Amino acid sequence: MRMTRTAPGAVRIPAIVRPAARHVWPTLLKITTAVVVLVWLFPVYWIVLTSLKPVREINSKVPVFRFSPTLDNYRDLFVRFGFAKVLTNSIVVTVVSSLVVMVIAILAAYALARMRVPGEKHVALWILSLRFIPVIAVGIPFYLEWQQLQLLDTWLGLILVYIAFNLPFAIWLLRGFLGDVPFELDEAALLDGLSRLQIIRKIVLPVALPGIASTAIFTFVFTWNEYLMALLLTSVDAVTVPVTIAKFIMPYTILWGDLSAAVVIQLVPMLIVVFLLQRHIVRGMTLGAVK
Image: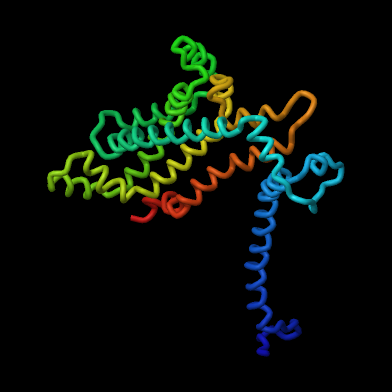
């Protein structure tokens, strides 16, 4: 073991101690990260656990971790509360509105980011400002208008509302992603005789795919979890999952088993979408960072 040189009278510390200290901090960082992740994931774990518990174990005064799992809560959810119809409503409304938003947003963002639009910065800021409007401020006007148009409690009514709310944010986000694509690609494509739509489909979309995927995830999650407008504009036929989950909290009791099962089912589509597009998320966040 090599000894370090020190001043006379000073305590000599073996040189091997300093390299050992450098290995302590990464270990502490990993432990801290693991603890934080466990703390954040514990509520999800507890919800899944509760959805598999019998009613007697759920209402126990002492938390129960060891029990015989059962699917009674899921069965009750679909048989007693007709959750299949509710789930279908959410899937149809979310998928259709997200697809329409992405198609329109890509075209609008391309025009604002890559074409000469008079006052395009002011137009983009105005579009984003529409997203700042509180939902509760326009909830009643939407209800009255939809009542006149007979769109209350319909898929079409919810789809139009979600398109209106999510489109400004999607355009703003995609404008930044598409603006980072080199303009030389458009110029070369125009010289080759391609139209603007062909340039978008064959050149811009493949290059900006990570950003488009990230925007699609945000649009899907915002629509899937939206509660207030679905509560105001639906009652029976077009009720969505968040509204149904809230109904399990009753004045004198809470149906914890059914609520937990519904929450687990609600998490599944979001996890699937994020899992399928996860490789694009990090690339989308760093798109344009290095040129």
